[in-house]
Image 1 (tube, rainbow, N blue to C red):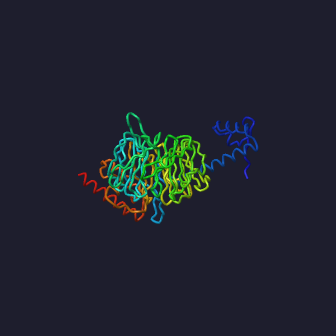
Image 2: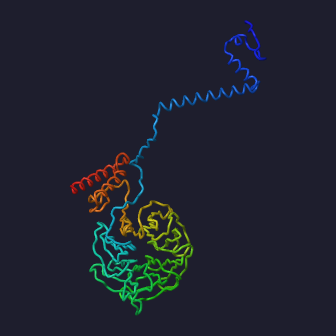
Amino acid sequence: MAKVQVAEYKGYKFPSKIIDSPSVNLLEGICYSKKTLSGDDLSQKFAVLEIQDKLQALKAKFKKKSEFATPKASIPNIEPEKISPTTQLPETWRCVRTLKSQLGAVNAIAISPDGTTLISGSDDRQVNLWNLKTGKWLYTFSGQAEAVLSVAISPDGQQIASGNVDVYDGLRLRKISSWQMDTKKFIQTFFYLNSAYSHNGFVNSVAYSPDGAILASGAADNTIRIWGRYTGRVKRTLNEHSDAVLSVTISPDGKILASGSADKTIRVWDVKTWQQRYILSEHLGAVNTVAISFNSQTLISGSTDTTIKLWNLQTGELLSTLTGHSTAVLSVAISPDGKTLASASRDGTIKLWKLCTRELLQNLSGCNPVAFSPDGKTLVSGGNGGSIKIWSQFTLDSGLSGEWWEVLGVNQSDRLNVVKLAYRRLARLYHPDVNSSTIAKASMQAINRAYKEFQQQVI
């Protein structure tokens, strides 16, 4: 082996080959490195650099593969979720009709026992009758000088009662009036003893007993009054609340009356003796609404404290508290099968809950009050600007049928832009690009036919 010639530069020994090189900068750099890094430090430094080099090489390799596999894009391309034909799709609700004849806020609604007729009372002094299926206005009961705050229909569907404000000799009188449903004739006013009024305060709620023999009313004078339906005479006055009575309801088995009040309590009464069974005082605000399930086992209340509470009606035990509303809960309704709860709050939202699991199912845009039809397939609610919304239950895998306006979920008299919006909304649900089920294909065809029929009428 040939011996390497060694020479010195600035006290360091280098091969003569390097010393003789014209690159002085190279020698200076090596000398500086030897001064700052010696022995183990120098070996560690080069080891780290070697690892970094390998990492950079791996990154470059990975980047090259990624660029080859996926084109670079500034905005991610998110594909619509495909719905499998075998997927069990959840039930949902959509607004199929909006009634806009009311000139003031809708305060109360009721649905006839046969599910064909809707009754509404509002600030515009009117009690209106509507065909629930078509949304057609049927009749207006007149005679109220001011707002109608509450309405009810007798169980036989023959009588309507309303709590309203009337004016007589300059006095604002709080009255309960009744009409015959079939003849549309006024029947009577429920006068308290020899007075000219029914209550000495706004009549916030009225409810018939299941047998239709009595009518209960709750008012701002802190009282509940029990009236004979046919005589119009007061049978009893319940005085236990210390503030306005906001809601009254009688259980479907006819045994219990429940009342909610601004005094933050719920009082439960025995209908046979009219004795108070117990008081519920868990709410932190006014109890605006109470409802009883169709099996007469569960009491549900909604409050200004934004909560909904479920109670065992027989024992008064608190079963659950539902939270989710951000403002006062003004109305609750239970579906006839006892599976779904609808609640409406002051913020203009309606929430649908699955009662057995307490799960929130859906949020709807609507207002107080709310009511289910007897078959549970229709939900009616208040809307903005004195309107009433009619909601229908459906599943994404159920076909659409009916007249063109029923398929599109609009009113027959709606304007072009409203119908277009409804068509586009349905297309987003049923178009083959987002829903590959067989039923969706048939539904999309029905939607297209309905929209084409509408366009022909416009032309």
